[in-house]
Amino acid sequence: MPAPTPFADGSRVAETERLVLRQFTASDAAFALRLLNEPSFIENIADRGVRTLEQAARYLLEGPIASYQRHGHGLYLVELKPSLQPIGMCGALKRDGFLDIDLGYAFLPEFWSRGFALESASAVLNLVRRMLRAPRIVAFVSKRNTASIRLLRKLGFSYSGERNLDASSDPVSLFQLQLQET
Image: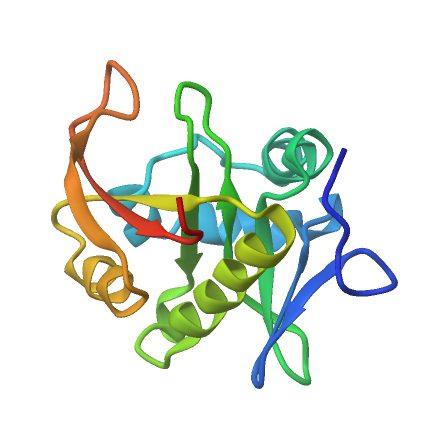
């Protein structure tokens, strides 16, 4: 059963001083298409092969939106207040083959270095603690992605080795954060 959200309409999952995090809908396909094709996304996360609006809508339906139904959480759209301009995504993912949920995020380059990733990731960690009551959360990051490694360390994550996300991928650094007393 999906975890309850703290907002009455169900689509907003968190608010910070400057940001709104909400569930994706298929109507966010144009933003997803742009974000998924940013060179930084392809280099640091993966090339999802999404090249059309239709593919972007399918990515959202089969990825984040399906995850809300299946796990009660997923990647959320991050919007600036008060304009609700989409600037990135941040959320908690449940990957097949991994016990723990993991923190994921990506932002359009023009919104880097302004604290938005830290602000939205902190909001997601609060949701994971409060709503999902997960004992720990992990994060996978490309070894070259020094900005993300710095962010994870600011959030309290510690390095925990290297992992392959799948048989065809290069190893990535694994970070973890204890959320609950064990």
